[in-house]
Amino acid sequence: MKFNTIYKGDCIEILNKDIEKNLIDLIFADPPYNLSGNALKWVGNKTGGDWNMVNENWDKIPDAEYLKFTKNWIGNCYNVLKKSGSIWVASSYHNIAEIIITLKRFNFKINNIITWYKTNAMPNMTKRVFTHSTEFVIWAVKGSGWTFNYETAKEINPEKQKNGEIKQMRDLWEIPLVQGKERIRGEDGKALHPTQKPEEMLKRIILICSKEGDIVLDPFLGSGTTAIIAQRFGRKWIGIEKEKKYVKIAEKRLCIKK
Image 1 (cartoon, one colour):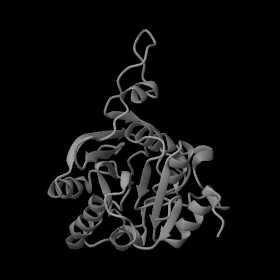
Image 2 (cartoon, one colour; image 1 turned 180 degrees about the horizontal axis):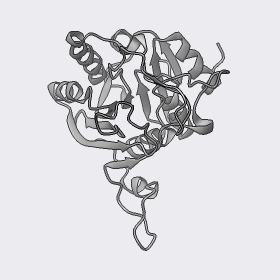
Image 3 (cartoon, one colour; image 1 turned 180 degrees about the vertical axis):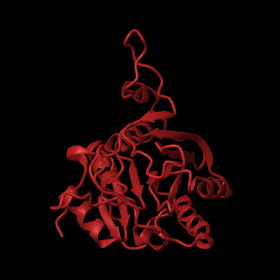
Image 4 (cartoon, one colour; image 1 turned 90 degrees about the vertical axis):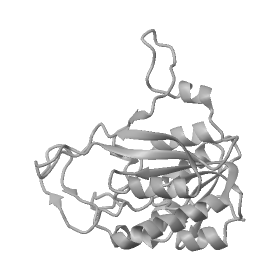
């Protein structure tokens, strides 16, 4: 097994063939939400500049195949997780049903569903529905003995008691969409990855649900945030990514020599 490396290819195949069974302590997965299919854009948006809806080929899976796709990657994640391992899966209301159904099918126990409140969410374009300002992160465990660093969760919780003391972390996380220096952009100023997740989110997940030296795996590594945070806090990591353009971005961020 190679650690601190990016496996290039389809995660279902790599999880099945290249990752040792019952090895991984923690998985964070940000799978396709299957939202692409149009080219909606908002030119001249006053709150954050020009905006384009995600419209990527990797995010276009026929509805009849999406549940099968979800079953295949979650099933292979189950196989590589330790009995005491945790899996965190990012989602929106569009695909949360498929994920929950599949997790239950593999006898995962769902401990929490975190509501991610995006404090700087984009305004609604159509003016026909409420503004979508939340996504979800499902935390599930394979068996018993999972890691939950309770005191760490209190210490890193930005919310405090009225007297300033630390408090328990709730299942509502107020974290802005990635912006500023953290956002990976090209020379034209456009974001290089449309669904880059905040470092703060991964920091909470990794510090709370793993220990130093544990192995963290991301089957949809994207721009590499999971690996960066795992490395920063003394965890081993494995990333899987099939899109060559994202592999290059992640390698650059991680300073990996080719």
